[in-house]
Image 1 (cartoon, helix red, strand yellow):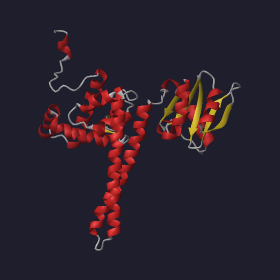
Image 2: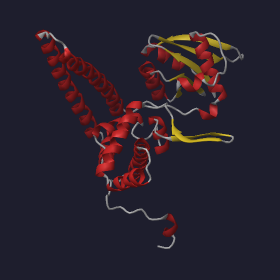
Image 3: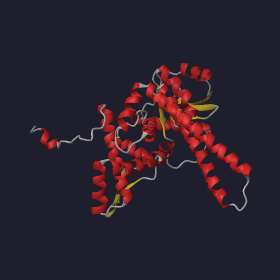
Image 4: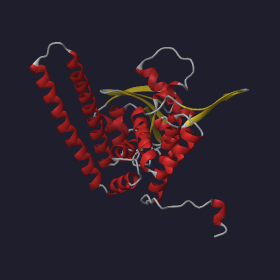
Length: 329
């Protein structure tokens, strides 16, 4: 395996690799269709590209490399940064060399990254557009509420904000309908969406968010990994005689975390088993409200992954059999 470290940017990317003579080489490739194809044509068969995950800047490279069967691994910048130790200086040639060194030291930990399906990729683009429109609407609504405190009002400003909010609402509805249309046209996405939404407390927005963040439950393959991604997975914090218990990490996808918390609050009312669990933990054992909601969110993820893996809809009458009794049946 020959590692190629890549530092991605919008217009070009820097590449670091070791040539046949054992010397470190550095080249610059324009981030265009033609130049990337020329770069991929010159790669040896055992080449493995390692790059930081930088969003849309690396989508074209991933698309072309995946179509040609070239191995690519996108790594979080946090993991690369905290693996280098104490370093000084920063430049594009240095960054791609450090990424290459990371890949060479951690070849056993490199996970191949694949370009998502066309439906999933379009769904991600629409989701990003929806989030942008929702943020714009939130700003407009906040400004509109603040205008109520003004002693004097401008009718032009009020009408402009009202028209903008109305237009944003229409665009958000349009994007949501298109997202639902894409899901309905893709059999795999449609089946997953129906399974997840059959669970009490989980709606279409959270379902779409989970599908996008986990690549339809393939890239993030376990509920523990999904909980870690969302920042709701508890981790121990102890050393020596000091034991501070388990706490969730502040690192995580806050948007997904807030959606899972809202689903947990809804499930604690409409999902009978979760409602009983909340009453037991909060009313009887006097656990903190957010601790109970965090536990319910983790339980919902376990149910989601189990049903998606089996391809079954949620059954409210399902009874879990104790594994110790299965041998007796």
